[in-house]
Length: 139
Image (cartoon, rainbow, N blue to C red; front, side):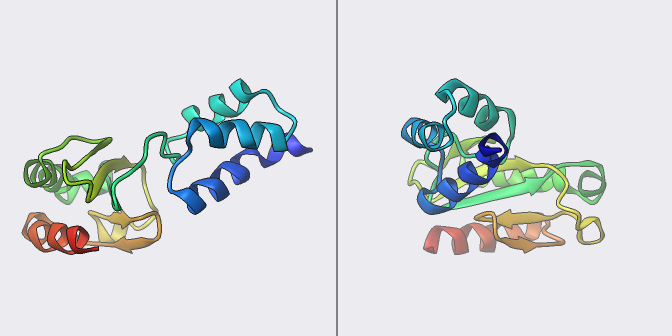
């Protein structure tokens, strides 16, 4: 039964420290009586776990079809340009990590972003990027 708790344990650890480090994997494995490689397989299979320390703010943008049809690709291009990074990278000043996200179930508000896994915003377009980045860098 403990094996079924691995995803929840990883999520709790990530919420506490911001990412899933090697020591977190070992701690979860020890707590659940699992081999560390089994925990690592779960952590690397799912895209929801940060396997590297993220920036102060994590910005994830949906690129699935409904968001793409509403301009997400142009918004992504602008984010990458303004931040000087690609997906799964962190700005040089450590302020923002950019992630590509799967559907968040808010297609009516496409394109959608989620900030720090908690704050969802919809209808984010190219014209919103400068203010959004400024806000995230100030956090």
